[in-house]
Image (cartoon, rainbow, N blue to C red):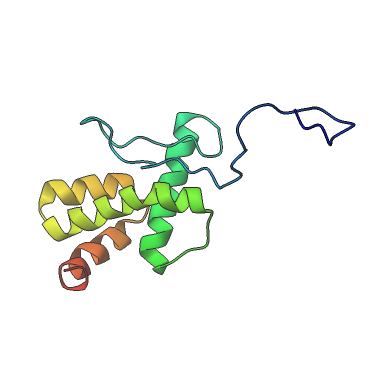
Length: 119
C-alpha cells in the first residue's frame, strides 16, 4: 500500500504495464489446421469470413487499403495465400482463388500478372 495516498483504492500488485496488447499470428493456421477466421469485430462466422474475403479482394484490386491494424494483420495470411496460388497457376489453385475472391476478372488478372510481379 502507498502510505502517501490518503484517498482512493490501494493497489498491492506489481507495476502495471500499459503497453499495447496484440495477439500473435491472427488468421494463421494453427497446428496443421486450416486458416482461422479471427474474431475481430464479433458477428457470426459467416460475417467474419465475408469481411476477410472483402478485404482480401479490395487489397488485391487496389494495391493498398486503409483498415485497422488487427484486420490488416489478420488479412496478411489470406492475401499471401492468394499470391501463392496465383504463382502456382494450375487449375486447382485458380478454382480455390475464385472461390475465395469476389471478382472473377480480378482472379484472371492476378493469375496473369503474379508470376512476374511477385518473385
